[in-house]
Length: 226
Image (cartoon, rainbow, N blue to C red; front, side, top):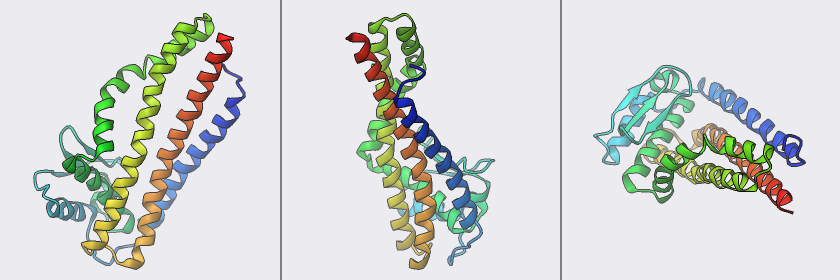
């Protein structure tokens, strides 16, 4: 299990993940220095976009840190980090409006978001158990445990894959509304796309790692069953 041929591909994917995280920070910092023509802060843009989409009941809250921004579907609140909440840059507005995109998805019951919310409790429960079952199945040569571990791990992989369209759709909504509402001009869209694209790459890398790990476990199971 520890020196499986698939580990080489997983290592490459892990390297891609590290590069993606580095790119997110670099791209955000670059466009955090580029103010938008509208002069709006991330908090102001988020508030206007929420109100324009009938989400006046969804608050915009400030949270400490950098790139800790998120939409909380349980409390139905958009939380923005220091540079996003107070900043008036292309990076700030892109991230803020992306989180509002999730709030809009929640309102319209975007199918993939609904699916992610429904499987999250199950995935949260089994994802912590899956590695233990996989290790136990391998070390004790118990194919049954290994199979259960694979099934549990498949849930975590499914969650990662469902997350991809959710994130891409939120970014698409954000860019469309930012332009439509005059938060950015056409010439500023390229910068917004780079910020949001860099962030999306981290989810792609995470999903790729999960898929490759699942493939590895399935191959191990098949070989143990021979």
